[in-house]
Image 1 (spheres, one colour):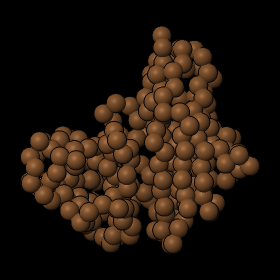
Image 2 (image 1 turned 180 degrees about the vertical axis):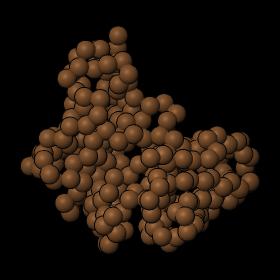
Image 3 (image 1 turned 90 degrees about the horizontal axis):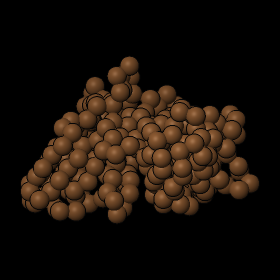
Image 4 (image 1 turned 135 degrees about the vertical axis):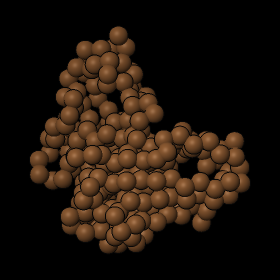
Length: 117
Length: 115
């Protein structure tokens, strides 16, 4: 079974631009979560999507948004980029056999390294 | 409230010696606990998972962890370190909260293996 895939793997943008990152979950998984990882803040939860609906949201500004498609693929968008948005963005998928509150294991993709200049 | 404390930000061991990475947690619910490993510029790979079936959990690459409810700990161990174990390790707590899964990551422990 193929793992979680993320595209692109690396991105360089300038301040003020916007960016869209893509995540394809493991086949059959219905939940996708996004995380931001930086040296200073560690791993921080952005949001989770389940069946095309945002189910949970972390403490990030509205510039960070996402969506999920009917095939469970997810995209994350960051508008008006700031230098502090430079980070590794990780996507994780879960099977959620037990529903949105299930503690099924999360499987992570390799991440997208975003650099904002 | 839910929290994870990884007691050491850096651990250095010699190749062939035991590894101990410490993790304490706090959760208002019966949590699931995980250890993940991250090699440089890679995503997180699941090492092992505790979900109340057995307190001693065996994972991949010779790692294991013991859940101790009385100590609220979930320390990760390996009898003999290998150079390829050099990476960052994350302890994770997951529990139901308000109808959703709440996932909390520790800050990570960087393991250095000295030849």
